[in-house]
Length: 168
Image (cartoon, rainbow, N blue to C red):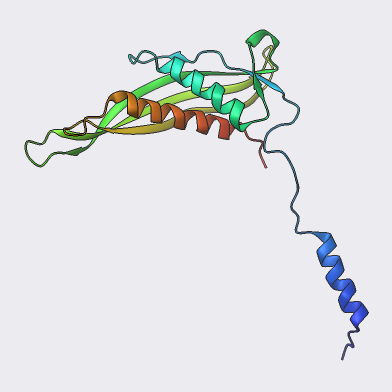
């Protein structure tokens, strides 16, 4: 039978406490990057103006959620290039009387790449990133398409910034 003394027990407990649990204090974003340029996204759809809204939302999200500064392209270390490849509307519900569309989901699909400036390597890339927004078209509510577009654009900006986080 092994006799455990108080000292042995205290040493074991101290080594567990001092050893930690394997957690590291590390930035969520690559630390060697300080600036990002965000040129206006290309728009391959017939919905005009979405590219400006998305670019503006992305710049604001980068400034709010990352340690990076969004600046003009020539002097930035990196750039995010993207294109809106598809926007579609799907009816989600219909009225009981007459079967008129009641609620619609707007879906925006983008491709983007975050690259080092001067044709450097790609840091991250995502094709087919999707975000949605919904609006009610039937009376008495009658929300505009702009509401769903705004929601989808904000969701896309958050998803792109989330993709910019460092791989663990």
